[in-house]
Length: 65
Image (cartoon, rainbow, N blue to C red; front, side, top):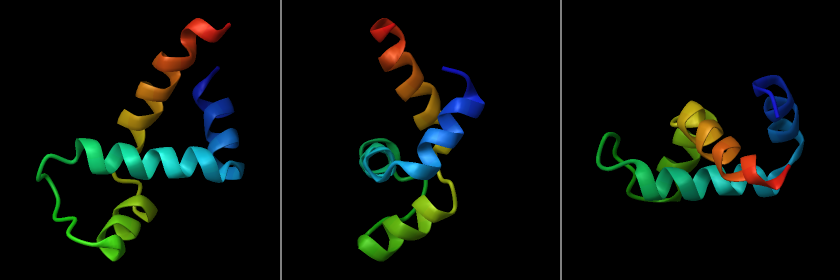
């Protein structure tokens, strides 16, 4: 899957967006203050850790082909 294909899928897939939010919670390591749901939504909507999540996701599905 290319980055463009991932971006198209991400824009239409709420489950994938939920996985991104889970990824943020597991990987923010204090780089940004996330103390409640509003902070998480702000981080998510701002694209926080998006590239890292995209790479993680693409690496995880690589064996599915």
